[in-house]
Image 1 (cartoon, rainbow, N blue to C red):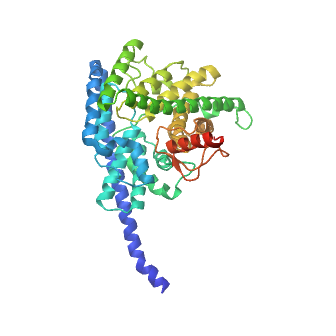
Image 2 (image 1 turned 45 degrees about the vertical axis):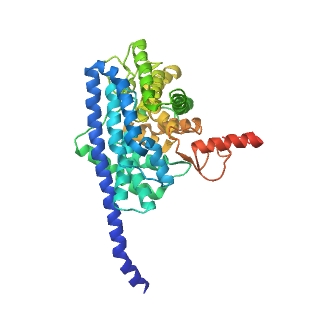
Image 3 (image 1 turned 180 degrees about the vertical axis):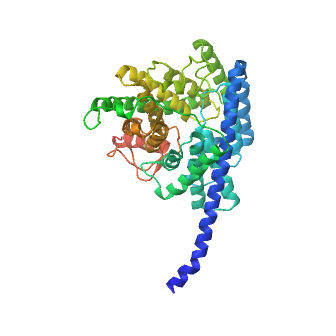
Length: 454
């Protein structure tokens, strides 16, 4: 009887699995195709800005228009990455399909006029919006919808950077500090791989990052250079503090805009004035856009920091400032590529101070600041290995894990939750709370009975 029951249920289980697999692949292919279009458009917009420097003067108009359109027609799309994370934790109104075209167009427009922004947030929102829209279309249940949203994040991240392994882990790790849903790892990996393959099939390439420092250059007992690793750990603390400062500055600046400029469409107008003033004050446009490449060979760029023998002590700070002003005011785009720039530039500065090869420390800073700002040390490590090679795995791991610990309970994603505080003996309220809720609860506990936390 049991065998007969199993055999009778088997076709339904196979059909159900095949159905979910088809939906997953469809989301990944659609996401990869949309990301390919996005990357192509981003390249064209960046080149247009290089060719026509006067486009920067359209920044106030572009900023006003995009924020007004989001308010008038965007609905919940303005929630961005945080909305997707919230919908995975507690499904409510769903992730609107319109989020995908809105964020794609707004991000390209941001880069066209010179806003300092990235692309990861856009790709993740494209994946989440397509997953949410298709999931509602086929009437998935709540658990299946959550899984599909995770796969949408993985597909978008893997597609935009060409790092599918990191994309799969990021989609799980970003949801909650101290807990990973390993049951979703295989679907997320499949989605990230398909998203990446789709971008490649469209003929859209990714930036190739490499450093000259070789893992064979590490000397010492059993290939362990204690002095080098100690310096990397020290740099990791600085990377983590920088990541924390970035996340805090982004939130505080957004609060200041809301307080002093109540009408949201005017915020990017004032931000544009600040950015344009800084451009002419510093006499450089190096901190506009992605910062991956520049029309001027002498400009500081992300790829340039990874070359050996670099010396630069200020670029990380100015990219930090330009990005916080841009994103806090309402311009669209991700935070991650600017974080790569900030981390790599800071690595160059620290390399000169600590006597560490600057290309190695730039590569570590590239992923370590990202790890600290997003609380995703495993995904950051895997990304570093995918981009720079496994020979650098140990110093990359030290940098990422130390930066994660040093960044405290801060994040560029305020919807991220805490399952387990970073400090093992730290105060814990019980159920998983968002970072914002957790910090308020901890502050209340400290006022009430003096309990200290991590």
